[in-house]
Image (cartoon, rainbow over all chains, first blue to last red; front, side, top):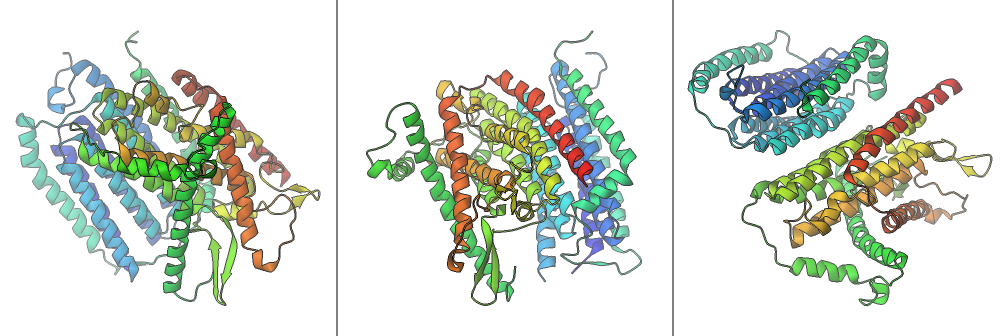
Length: 100
Length: 168
Length: 352
């Protein structure tokens, strides 16, 4: 038997890895993937709490988080493609001027 | 008896995938590590009795959202990452300690919650797809409709942004 | 489902897995033979007929040839993903067969009752959709790792096609789900037992009125497995390039096997969801000894019918152009599938 807080600690570890990646990585797509990692950590916390408090609303919330993450990924990647078309670089350090 | 083994194996896989995501230079390797993390999380959801969530994690997250990421990496032919500039050095100097502090505080707070904490047992399902569906379409009907409008907006936005040279 | 202890459960499961894998791989080899024979006869020529009687040993000769060919790894490929992609394809093709029920329960000895299915999980239908979603990676990664512009374009086209038709596939299955009320494949088959008016079997295709859903499922499955008339990514191998250009001998054979295993899985799924699984169309009088065997034979007859349909369509229809293909998937199949869901749920709601 595994205590529930092991799952919560794992979710916190994943979330922290996501934050570290978001801060230190320089490629736009990798930064975006770290955001998805953070969202996954939060999903795990939701499901663990749904188990502990014996409520299915946690699962429904995970469903909504996934839907919002999918919508955000679609629009975010479209923005990245547009930025790439004009700047020709995927390095966030180079995308620092409003007008080329 | 088998539960701690399964939990630790898949938790180790998830954390290893997350660290690999940070350590790899090429975005495609990071994308594949993230898919591994999502797969490990799907197994952990099954251990917590959330079968519907595990299934849609694989179908939607690992099977559609990450395919989108892999497509974009292939289309843009993203190369290996370059670290240069003052910004990345500053980010490293301030980023690591800040996250270590914040993340450490979070982990400590979650690990030492007041009550001894409940034990997770395999096979104690909260309720299957039918109950989740009932909740979704009765109690959470308004958020459901709002997210469908959100997806419609996202589709329109992605189509408009993806068009070439249409700046009227 | 009844086992005296966990060791028996493990042994029975391992035996079932071994039998299913052996039967599936043999079926894959002989589906290749069947295809060459049938397409040959459609084109008014004999298919393979020299190696063994009726060319029945042809798959053996083909396997031997593919193993003995030079296994060449081109120098500029990205090695880890190049090796991972065919392994992923074959693994996923073999995984989805483990959820399909082949027959009723089997009683061994006095206290073991095992279903003729490797695993019956509560969300079986969703799990099969999940495996279909992940199998897009096998195609996309193989094209990317080959470090070849044409492979990359072929792979991107193939994976875009697979992702588009996955939607129509999933939506067409919702009609079946509404009628059966459960995601478990065994429950779906159990709901299709019995007869209506004395002689029409209670399958989802007939009395469930899911014929529109069946045709949507069939077309979406043809596009998912990259078969004619949707095989433009594959036909490019004959023209310029495709996603498995840079693969030789054994790895190419693995892609090939994965494609035919997917075909067989799609056929099995269609019989389970729309044609009543192992329930025969005529009432049969079987002695008690043969009771577990006859349903499996009916199941195999139906799957054979689907494979025959696949090969017949391949020999007859020309292939779609890529823009026609995508337009068909998004503008025709998807609205039809949604309309099917709406009509089915209306009928079910008004009936109860």
